[in-house]
Image (cartoon, rainbow, N blue to C red; front, side):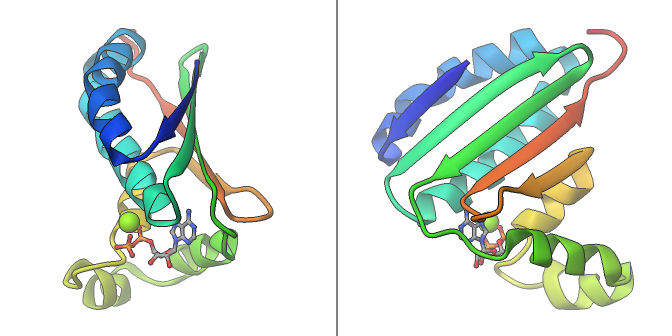
Length: 132
Ligand SMILES: Nc1ncnc2c1ncn2[C@@H]1O[C@H](COP(=O)(O)OP(=O)(O)O)[C@@H](O)[C@H]1O
Ligand SMILES: [Mg+2]
């Protein structure tokens, strides 16, 4: 399913529908998927008012893609630097900060995270539980 979201108001309207869809697609993993989705969508909306969301399920994997209308950034570089830092260091730097936790949360909760080349689209792969 592909969904264009124009403006935060549209997202408010879309949210119940997304929850329903996640419930169908992700079952017991719905809460986890919602947390990940919220972080991705919040970042995307900061870049502008146009956001495109793609959701698909391939076998036991849920694939979320969130694209914004911004210029993008060196997202994969930032993700990589999160991988190479140790957790204690990250904890000091990020977890107590007001900001900069989103990517850390997405990395911790999703099984795969990457950006496109431009850095204006994030792709998240979430392995679903065996009960789906
Ligand atoms: N879609 C995006 N387009 C441009 N920059 C982004 C995008 N997503 C994340 N970023 C950059 O990565 C940083 C870290 O994101 P995140 O971990 O979610 O923290 P926060 O949203 O609290 O700043 C953001 O501050 C922003 O600079
Ligand atoms: Mg964020």
